[in-house]
Image 1 (cartoon, rainbow, N blue to C red):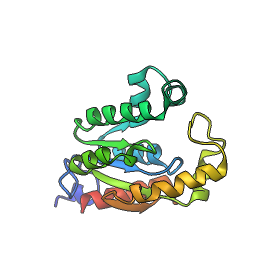
Image 2: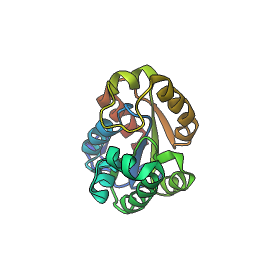
Image 3: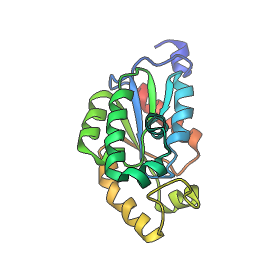
Length: 181
């Protein structure tokens, strides 16, 4: 290993698992977008936010898509855009909070990326999301809690799990270390 690699300065071509993408999964407010941007900078990789790509693809916000077309249509768009995003090497992808719900998405991610579940306490998510503006599935705290609990088993299918209750920079550092091992 070169000195630059030991110091974390050498760009990474592939993760230790042989993948050229890292996908961050987790519930709303777990830090996917923030950590993905920091991680991409650390790895000298591209950064993609799947929800942003979906909104561009649809020409509407996520909330507007949910309101006009429903969750099923949104999830179909999400799967379509994921298949496109998976083609770009050396990319960190911030997945949507529900991307891992579909088995076909989990299989695609498993085949092409090192996936990371950013596991956080429910209270952390609620604190980070605040009022939940622009989040179509955010509403009644009890319903959000049920959704949080229901999704844990899907997120747990990620390649690795990282505690994301800490600062985003620490979380990105942990993921980078795992990718380089």
